Image (tube, rainbow, N blue to C red; front, side, top):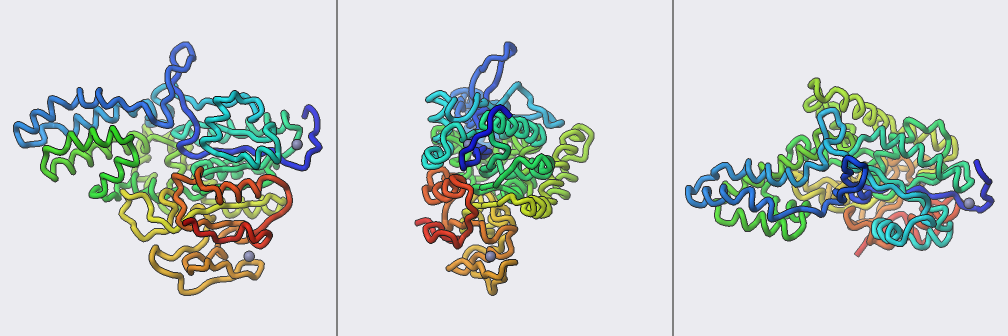
Length: 442
Ligand SMILES: [Zn+2]
Ligand SMILES: [Zn+2]
């Protein structure tokens, strides 16, 4: 270590979620060709050009005239830059953009991007921009490679800040990365506390439903508006308007399946987000063939860390690592999923984000409440959450009615995270009435 830092803070390493690391396509010379994720470059004209003959034929013949397959092909062609081979390696040279150092070393443009993803001005003021770091990774990449990159990154943070431990702040999919990191490299003893924001510690039920095709295609309108920009949705709508409901439905199903299969099935990070209860069956069904052998080995390893996460947390807690968790809940899971009763933050089911708390089905209340190891009941005022069954009941905060997708705009959530990360005192849900265990977002 270069020089010890004597400040009272610990550097924060943010491990962002699925839509938060900018990923670029690189050309043969290793230069950036274009940003491919977060996805924004949909070429509507190219899709219309590709499907126009089939649309015309379908209108004339009153049959689907190959439209579903043609449209699926045209749409997936726009997205295939994010696809992987069956062994889990990327089809193209796509890599996350990385930052040269802490926020203090970022350009204005980089800072603006990071702040759009995770606005934490109070935290930055308190710990200093040189103690705030933003790790990035390809959201559709290989989890164990990402974990190795994170390990190297943490070494740089320690070296440059002069601290021998860091705080991890995993968000959403970052929770699966943090779980695998702690499972594999917990013995490095370089983590001080983990302040997780809507973490997918046990994956997301929505990913399992999408992989297994347990979907409700009747809800396609909401889904395409979630997946695509409004002009793309208008294009899809316009193309389908002349057809019978049956043809429109079949076309959309074909397109959505092609997109989901392309994005999910060969992708280690997505397999890394399949809940433990579903992983053995689904991986056996889709990854048992020879071409997927390498992918399955890596996905199995990621699964093993998620499966053993409770032991990992206990082991790390014994060493003094604090697990603070922010769980949003009370909402229906992704519209395309058939389950309309599972408590979630819209993307991640709440049991995953809370490390095992108990939730009533939506619209119902729990009949009884348990007691945590410290003798408290942790019942939500509206009777829908029993936090006592979670792995860290005294340090898990709940925000009802807050959607996962907009959590970066939710000040109460971010203020709680900043409060937890800003100084190194132990804090729990009883510490400060300004940060109660249960908050309802209105
Ligand atoms: Zn310091
Ligand atoms: Zn308790």
